[in-house]
Length: 286
Ligand SMILES: [Zn+2]
Image (cartoon, rainbow, N blue to C red; front, side, top):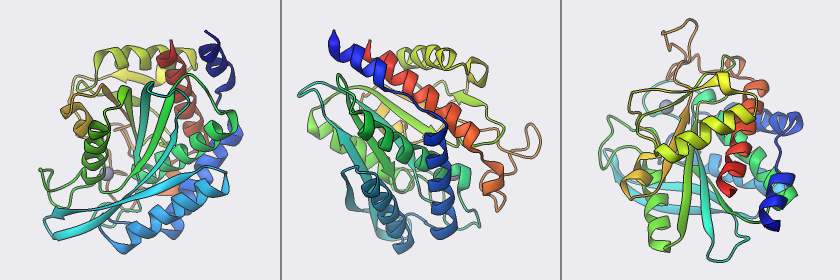
């Protein structure tokens, strides 16, 4: 099959791509913190991501919607970029949230910005290589963070909206891959138990091929993240998350604190994460 061969040959994520990921994450943090869900600063952050994509030749759009929150009806802004090379073919969706958490002082550097920068770099790479044989959607999601505690009207606004739209589109979906907190300098990626088994196997194979088999492990816990609304609508979905983010093992004291800062993430970690995603795309093509 020529398209698969082309895809396998063209996709790669190298150090210059990781530098784009890191610098984009840094700018998002420096210029757009806070960027809480349902606020005008969240809208500015979505606009920044759109401009970054546009400057790299990526045709993206903002999907604006409103939804009830504990603080009243709010507007949200998902950013969407798509490469449809196979009409009526299967889709892979890759997700990152970009919002910061309401009510606390947290710049959301690893938690939000890191994987949003990574997605911008992946978008630039996809635009450059124009891979054929697989339809790909990248989504920068607003409103992952809940305002009080997760419920049907608190948190996951962007992912619930995107999942519902994907369902309504009738598209065939092969995988939904949620990336979260993957810029951690001390990278250790967990795959929570509430991930689709076939995708877990694909992710583990991809990590080994990317030379990062020691950085990825399955965990027995369930994790609430943006992949959940997709799972709930019957899509195969996986969460890749580094949930050990702190000054010492087990502390997690950089998570949702003022210490979620740029010095705690690295381009090297984003290079590893990007390499795993690229190998996953190749796995999914087979
Ligand atoms: Zn968070």
